View 1 (spheres, helix red, strand yellow):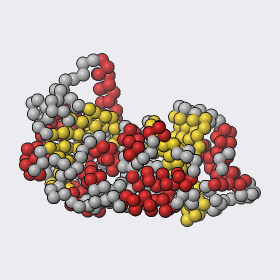
View 2 (cartoon, rainbow, N blue to C red):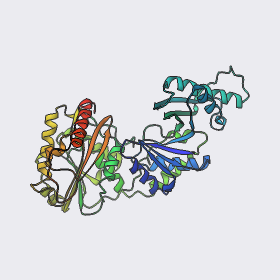
View 3 (tube, rainbow, N blue to C red):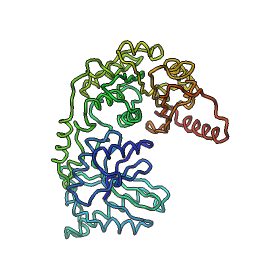
View 4 (tube, one colour):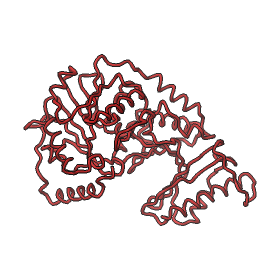
Length: 430
């Protein structure tokens, strides 16, 4: 049996690392595009404990699902037979509700999603009726109070996978962000950006978000610093499934609560600024709900007028690391303005030779000309998706940076042109 964690594209390795930190073996983990598979024993009690622990503790994954079927399927008859052969009576009792919520097909002979949904539903009902010695014409009543099982399926190169959800609302729903500014960053993506910086709290480093919006990046960082598990204060659909133990979820939450230390630092080392005072009010309210308001200082300020040396002096910390999601696309609408903003970021963080002393910059943006505007090549960059918008996570951390020069090779021009085209087609959809 497999537990499956769907992820944002580009962060699969981060989720795999999180799973390993929880004590699961690397040899049982398989990474695919947008998914991480964890092999577990065919033991519902053990699966229940693992599902609870993952839901409560995973910061970068999107949800936790349990795969119950995997087989090569190329015809509708095969699909019906494969699903019917599964012992559904072990997890579905007459009267409990279940839904074939959706699916997708890639490079497979079966690609009609509505038809597949219908066949899977009929196959499950057929098995449940037969197992309970009920006539074929029996209409099963569905009561959400008994159980609500949501099934998902996929076809990938004719490999059929059927799984059910244990999360409910996505894992990015931590419970603290009731209000948000325009085009907010998902909590799971914010956690992924932070994981790629290797920032260490309670040291000699200030973490600054100059375009903090509703404060998601800094709140995620502060909750990590306080030892707060991402899902410790919310509920999950898995604890309402009859074959899982709610006590496992309660135990996972209690264990997470025991590790929390909300003693605030003497001097805050998380700092958020935004030019919009309303965004700052929202960010403060979100931080209060998250329980980490004492860890973060917020201020209405224009990022373009900030000084790294002033921040170092103000917070009495020698190092400044910025992690940010500057405005673009729907939040700005004007590509030229986005480019000018990137130029301003370059002036704040760079001198003629590279990064200012004791400074690092990490920014995610759909502006395809960010390096050109800043004037230096990023030391690393990673392709990520913010919603449906393809973005780049530019990482500047070396003391001496390489000055930007337009791509000269044919391959470099082709790659740049393709990326530019993707972003132009998606601009405004953030």
